[in-house]
Image (cartoon, rainbow, N blue to C red; front, side):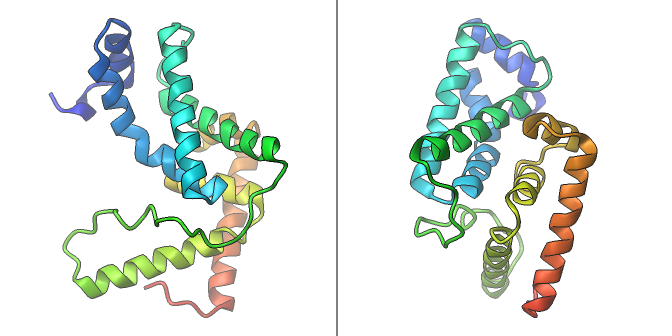
Length: 193
């Protein structure tokens, strides 16, 4: 049986029954989505790594204490923890996220690109970098919904629960984010092939 054929609920149950490998499977299943979401919020690789670890420490403690009861909502629950810890970081340090380039390693450079020539890979990487820079120029509420939807792969219902707004508000923020991105792409005459 492959890792993705086992449900989150079954992995959690097996982990609670002493199978440590099941938590590793959950971690592998979602680490990319969770880390990318944190990184796009804090815009610093090292801080994102710390918050990522803190997120899964909190997840582990909650699972071990058997306080976790949200059947079928594991990923949204983890994303809520990650988002809240990211926001708490800025509250503790009394600074807001800055809209500057990250000096850390690009988390997207390791994404597999299949059947592309080296030139196509370079163009793809450049396009992804351009889009990430434009996303940083969006209002925070629009950034958040776009990141959770596109990079976190969450439904609008899950996003509305995490951000504590209505589904219609989340949909509206996504619509405005996409409109603003299109406008910025046209204004900058960017070619995103």
